[in-house]
Length: 327
Image 1 (cartoon, rainbow, N blue to C red):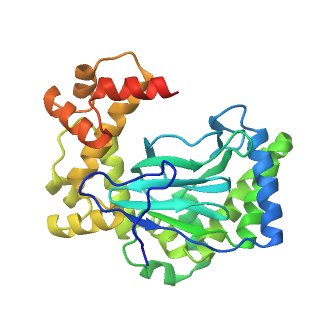
Image 2 (image 1 turned 90 degrees about the vertical axis):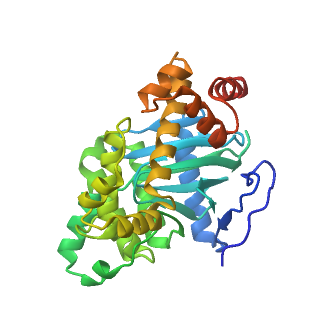
């Protein structure tokens, strides 16, 4: 059962008048699992030259390292699993907090604007995570080859969940990471290992939630297509009726299912996506708030500043200055 979050050691805490829900798991780690985790942590650390996200020679595989807890950072998470080998992290989806630590993973099945925060990390024991992108086409192929109709009966699932890796999936993830040690083997073996990981995710306790992202006609698949449309046309006005028609749903049904997947209404999602992109632009480019507001689709700079401050706690220029001074 979800329990209210606690404000511990700089962790995400609710703003005024907001009540968050925490989701976490407490499975014990046995000796074999602990050994796998140590090996995985060593590989992630080796292939992370510094703090940050590091692409690898394996397409769709990234190593993430952070040597200190950080502030809440917004990002759009794409379909992937994030396997923690050391440290812990929590992400905020609207009014829900998802906390995960070894041997857990975070799974994202549709593009979601999230606030993430590493809460356990140090120079001696940095936060270490392996991110593996989920390929819906590969999921679809595996479902087609399996002939298992049970996956098609899944209910509309949240596009984000925390799970625990079983032993077989842990071993598959570790073998994939070990390929970084033998780059000549990557072109031949990486596709097979990634396919195995996708298969084991499907066959695991969370298979139905993973499957829904790839099954044509499923609610999650439809919402995922709409989300890609929104992201592609971020600065354009959003008309819920048109998006509902694209998903072949009535406006009321579309609103209900969209919120079930994303925890937000379509309008809330669109706004959060715009503001997340705006913050990314302000951090990575030498631009002012006004030009950024217009780039992400705002016609009023004052409205942009108000909504930005409401989401991130400070107006754009002050917020960005605070982040840069903390880096």
